Length: 475
Image: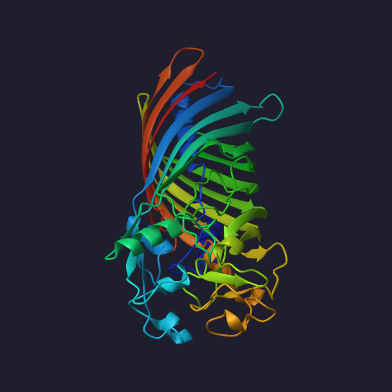
């Protein structure tokens, strides 16, 4: 057993070798999920039944409703901000002819003339600030059925979730110049256009967006390896069927349900050891491990441009056209998201006392960094960053007339995939579960309530707290 624990610890360490702070992102995946809380409830339920010498249970149905809310607004703001700040400073650069001025500037993140073409000098400054928040309401119906008639100790189960996800970007745009503030607001919401530029159509800012619908359905089998009073151990296999929505890239912080279109297969193992037994009172130490592999899928996300801050918003010229377009209009594209793994481990204490029960547990969740690739061909001789002096002439065969710094087209090598990549991260969670089991003779009822709180490094900023209530029946 010690060798197994060492092996799992090594896996978790290797999995997070590349953890680092991130900023200036265009996409954020949902937090990793696990079924540990359901497993703890399941074990507590079974312990209560055993205390009453009930071994005739063939099935269980459990309805859980939960609310989770992120609390790390500064961290989420830095994720979408620039230079690890929860904001973007827009203004005029002193030396716009030097690429170094873009990369090394400390007071202004991007010149306004890169996103609003034809501004007269001097250009007033403005600041876009973010205080994002993530909320999710979930209702999960769980059904578990014994198959003892076929194989002793074998169970099958099914999870069907319905989710309502709300993401609030909660941005504000402040400027000493009313016209500049209005122009910036209209630009980032897709409502600014002129004779020389078209509106932003992707990676737009919205104060609030939500989605409601089916989450990802899970189904699996469990087998009791050891089922003794003092020691229990079981293992399970499960699959995740993607039923939720996928990213569209239309908005910067769009709400997503489930696992963004990824299907998965997984393996888990659980063990519990009785450490105190006094008739109607028991205390157990419980340990669990879960591994999931998510299959590759296609999604739409917004890429950046290397060595250009907020490259997804700069104005591009397109060969043969007479209007400029925000880069996100063409950098939001179908991408192939490679498969990845998630590992989770948990340990805690389960206690029962005359039908009442409680659980306090710690969970560790980790996910490896994504690998994404462009799905379609990128034309290396079509787009270039526009100069401030572009006057509406049709673009020719060379970008010299409208590229500000290097007289080159934006090639596929210039595309910044990191902007749309969710980094590898480590997530810690503490959970408390309390409840009561009521014996009705041929059935038992379960009532539960729980609280959870997540803690993580800056590489996954959407840390959250949550509450959960549940009611179940066994038969």
